[in-house]
Length: 285
Image (tube, rainbow, N blue to C red; front, side, top):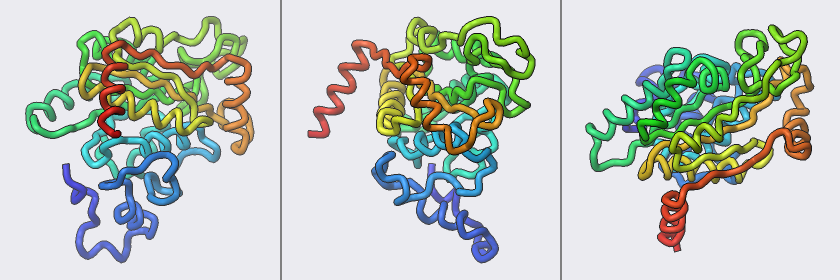
């Protein structure tokens, strides 16, 4: 891939918004950046269409800042709140139909491997809990069973936030939401355990309240997918709009859930992945 695809067509530079020009000129490409460098480059337009305090928007910023090879990364998204933000990033991305994002990513990764056999091309799925754990669960699992070399990242806001706050498979048991006026009747779907048992080389659950841990998980997930097979990262991204809390309370809500133990950050790493990470760390010395 080339950065040229993001360049503004000649003659239109002076009419494009300043923040978009800044996104092109000062994006994360050709730099070794991470979450600690946020503010020194631009990964997402400030005036994106997501709600104030959106845990998903913050998580997306951290994910984009953590990509080890952004200029050669393609994100495959799906219907949901996150799809509204993808046009606001300077990154190759595909909007797939609701739930089939892992099928699209599988074909794309295979095609890129054939077309660019001597280059690293990372394919990363970023989708909400509805697209990942409900409507798209079959295609997600099948991509893991097939050992596709892709990373799947779920933005878990525990609801169908884009369509009014209905319950999803990831909503906590007992939560009162639209279409669950008496409380959800079953627990959160155990997707990390499904990923582990389905053969993912690396699995992590993280939150944007711990940015460095989130960034490390993204890097590890992508590196594992390059060489070993599928990886899965679950990011808790609470929704102030549908869960009815103030936009400035997002991080405190996350920390409370972590303290209560109702959202646990953890990793599953196969022996092969541990060897890979150790070898890569040794190579940096």
